[in-house]
Image (tube, rainbow, N blue to C red; front, side):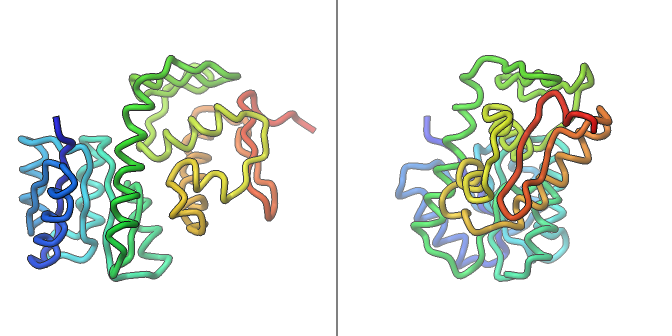
Length: 230
């Protein structure tokens, strides 16, 4: 069965081009020009991935991301002419998994879409991972920390899973970005600042231990039993 992609953009020409391009690659594609309509389509035709514009009349792409995250873990890629870091962080905070600036290379967009679609089945095929205070049920997409369940967005989950699989190691910014977002995002350092910050807040709400250590100018280290007290 072809993977489903939903395109949400109020510019008809863009939706027409994107729909034709993805359909030519064998995807089952639907395109809508209104976020409210997008939510109705999602309810009756659950997509495997969503591409959405950021600036639309009425409900914005950020609002749409929040609405999607309230009901689904479907990967969401934002497409926007806005290249400001603040816009990217706002979209990522709202639950977007990736951010592509217009105008963009269709080859790059296709590569990012393939990367996001590839990761979901890989996650679900793995056995639960137990390390330190963490129990990560990959198939169920659930995490408990010191016996307390925490709710993570899809990208927060992917990031934590990569940390857990490399516990104790120093992971560079580039290595993390490439592993979780793909090689085309290796320079998007704001992604890490947002998602590591979100992870830290959620982990702290479950346990007072420090699990994520910052290695200045290098990256991060994950300690599944918490940092030792000095």
